[in-house]
Image (cartoon, rainbow, N blue to C red; front, side, top):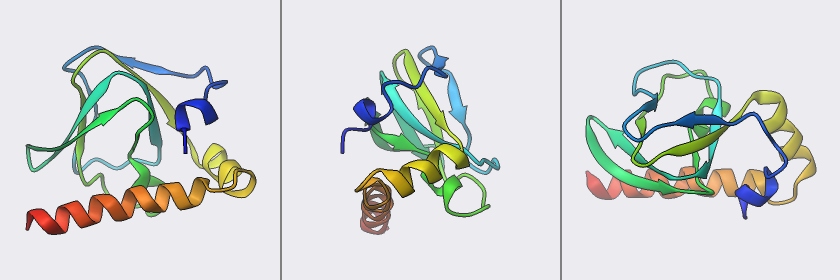
Length: 118
C-alpha cells in the first residue's frame, strides 16, 4: 500500500532537520506518523534497528495501546512526517481497504525482526 499516495492531500506535516528526534523510546505517545519525505533511523536501546524511507509508518503501536514508545525515531536526512491521530487512523481503517492489514503487517514484520535479533 502506498501511504504517501493515500495521505498525499494531508497538509499538516511536521518537518525535522537531519539529526532531530521525532520521539524517544519510553515516551508516551498517541500519534502514528507517515514518513512523507526523507530517511529516518529507528533505534532501540540506542542501536539502529531499521532505516525508514518515505512511505513508511512509525509509532504505529501508539494507535494500538497506551504503552510507551518502544523505539526512538530520528531524522537521518531532512524529513517530513505526517502525524496520524486516532480520528484519521480510524477513518482509514473503516474506509480504506487494506489499510488496517498494512499496519498489522508492519507490526508483524518489526516483531519478527526483533525476534531474530534476540
